[in-house]
Image 1 (cartoon, rainbow, N blue to C red):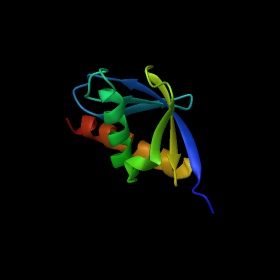
Image 2 (image 1 turned 30 degrees about the vertical axis):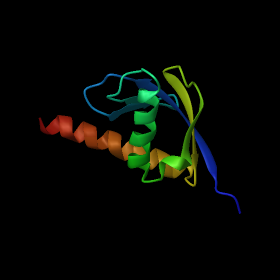
Image 3 (image 1 turned 30 degrees about the horizontal axis):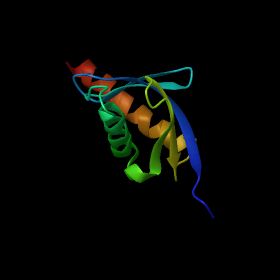
Image 4 (image 1 turned 180 degrees about the vertical axis):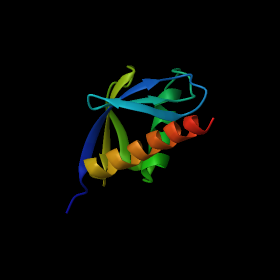
Length: 102
């Protein structure tokens, strides 16, 4: 049985101070990555960051649309939409809690 494939929409802001999940608006996840948008570095950083958050191999993630755009479609193998939303939401919640402590 082939692995399940799920797609998500992301809006990426390169050159950020830290990698983080900002929000989810109308089904589009807003993410910040530290890498500059030069020679694919921001795309590599995005895949690495999502791999860490979703606890899956980088080989299970691919940018299927928007290689040179800030708005991208990411295909993820082996995870359901619910699992992805839970993990990204958890990371976003950690950021909100961290800000509240400050």
